[in-house]
Length: 146
Image 1 (cartoon, one colour):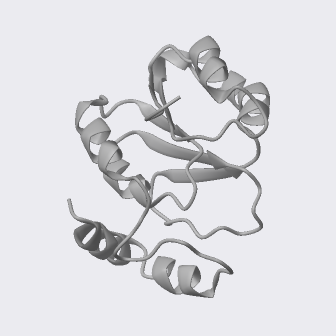
Image 2: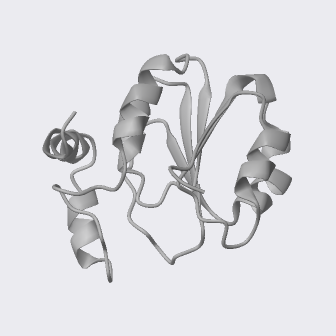
């Protein structure tokens, strides 16, 4: 799906998302560039629909749209004081460090139901790749270069 098609899908599901982005200071996505979302479209096709998708480092989370048919989409990113993210029927967002979410929220879930995605997440606070490998059974980790 092209960025423009994705932008239209987001607008259809959450008409408030793009206006909220325009008001957000230093917003660096728009209908033409939404970050690196292509990989999420493919993942949505191969991750079983009964899984809860845990997107570690979700940023603005335009990719949440790809997971509408999944059991749930959980987006986690650092507290940035109201980063706009699409409001969808199955999305829930947490503003905290990945390590904090793993410590406080992960125990509430059956790990067999979860599928973690860790794509392009900078290691600003923790070794996120290691945290994902140690705490999730089903996962996708992607860093283009090391």
